[in-house]
Length: 500
Image 1 (cartoon, helix red, strand yellow):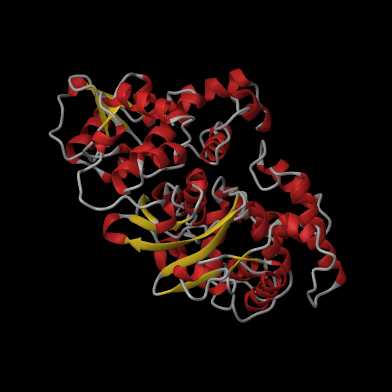
Image 2: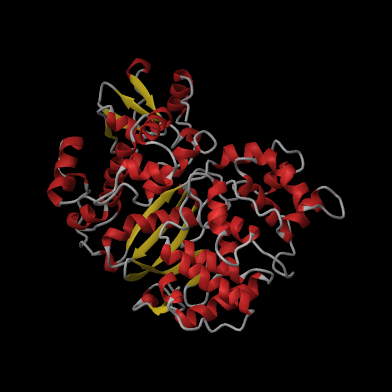
């Protein structure tokens, strides 16, 4: 991302302009601290301020995070989308742990994205001002800092959750950066220190506006029995990951511009992955003002954007789960697809002990790819070809653990998905949009999209090729244009056909 002019950045700092929150970070030479542009502290002199495109760049320059505005709570914006596709994809993979653990390396990350290691480093320095390793390390430090501030987890669990190899390394890192041990950052309280089994609560910030009602309605219409519950404006679901099971409870805090997630899960090392999935599901990283402004350049799309400011493109909790939903949804309604998904869970889902602590309606986890791939029969009353497609999907997911992660480009992602038996263009585009988070994915053959496009053009019909031609102007955010078109079609839940 190209930084705005220093004068613009400084004026944003002076006015504490929330539009710049997550887009820039300001480092103050006289204090050695870097802040968000909305920091309540007295504004530093212009000559003492240096502006950076990322927290990692500020930390690389020797500055430490502010304890007042807490840079770890800034919106985790995908502001580089459309500027560097490679950086965007790399950051998504880093958030999922691509540079964590033994054997991880920038070379392997670059290879997955189809570029050289030197090119990868150059792009990161150009757009974020820091190396991929620095970005990953900063994410770990800031996540640990958030856990220290917002939870009462024991520090040994915080270290493990944030991906530090040892408590000693964790302590050293914090002493070097903050000149104090991790425990000194925690506010004193008489509260007991629970483990993650008791549940921890984290707040994840987004950049407003945010159309919560639309996204919660979307999830409610598709909630799988025993796996998901949506009620009272909250989203709850079971979680199965790394051989462990638990549950989450997600709610909205509009006055703070964040969502609140309560996590009950026995394995602290899975915490970053769970948080990353929540961010993906609720599309918290969207630079929504930029996206809405871009789409509003189309005169016929502008009224739809104005009607629903902050409309997000919901993701999928798990790539395989979402892909199964997509195949189940071929040529049938949302209600029918939801019913079939519930039958799969009843037949193949594993019990989740104590899930009823989150909600009485939660009891089972969605089956893993390995479980369906090894099942003698899926057992659903549906066409043989579609059952074969489900089996092929499960086998492909087992064979390729990266099947639902971003490839070098969207075309490669679509081709990889279409190579699976029973996955055509619509299904591949839908999986790419929801599961892989390709924000330029666009299922142009979708009945709802075609119907809405015809309605806004005041014509009787429009072909998928016509829609594709028109959608060229919506790149690189065609997925959001699709969401606005789907939202404009009031018949989506009542008609048969391919569905959002």
